Length: 158
Image 1: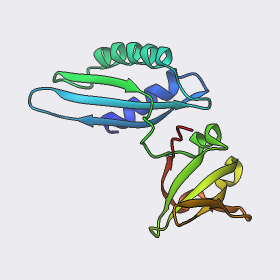
Image 2: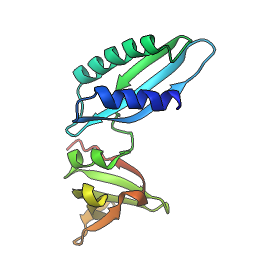
Image 3: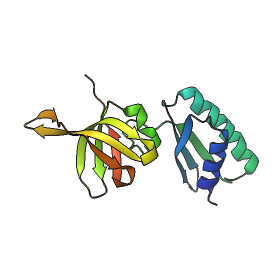
Image 4: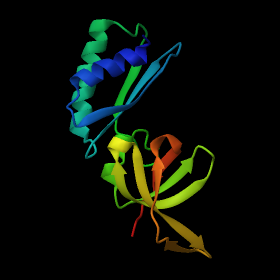
């Protein structure tokens, strides 16, 4: 089992059920390595939960001696520009616009209408852009989560 897998397993044991691991990235270096943990929650995740997780993880890593060299530990939520990696991240973004890139490289801007976790699908209302004017289509479409290569929330400052 890799270091990343061991860390994911430990985090799944200590995290409250509403929180989950998005990614664990460990990079070795001759001087200082880095360990980045991305967490999210069913309703987002706050700094207090990240700090508490960091504290517990740091103590556990010292106890387990998984990483022998010096390293920098960062536990955070994914930024606004990070792709949604798990179907569980989508419900908190219902009503927002997404830029979806499919596995066949089609790029679609759409409003997220519904998430069907049991079916592993999302339902969106695509947007047509004509001469710098956006217009919503009238027919929603659904995507199986496996068809999505990347989905980024479009931040609106209106």
